[in-house]
Length: 114
Image (cartoon, rainbow, N blue to C red; front, side, top):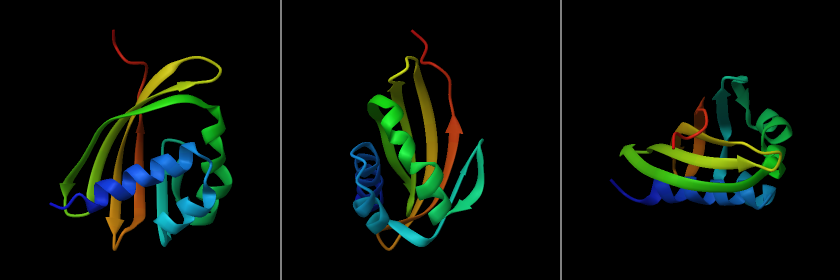
């Protein structure tokens, strides 16, 4: 498996944290869908309106595992700390096609165990 899809995911996370919407739009395909416990298959524009701006709440984020588990399918686990307090871990399944993210499925986690 190539490192290409995993690199696209890393770049998207970096763009999110940097509030670099222009770069994020380059990395996200027009047919993009985003699903989380709070969002049900929202499209690209809804993602940029509702989700992308939330990066300002993050004080720290660490990508713990980024693995391409099948061609174009990347699993990622990350830990983040909110500016208001609290540390959490999430996991995502991200599909990359032709160098662009087409689908994200987020599973929210709780605080890390000591």
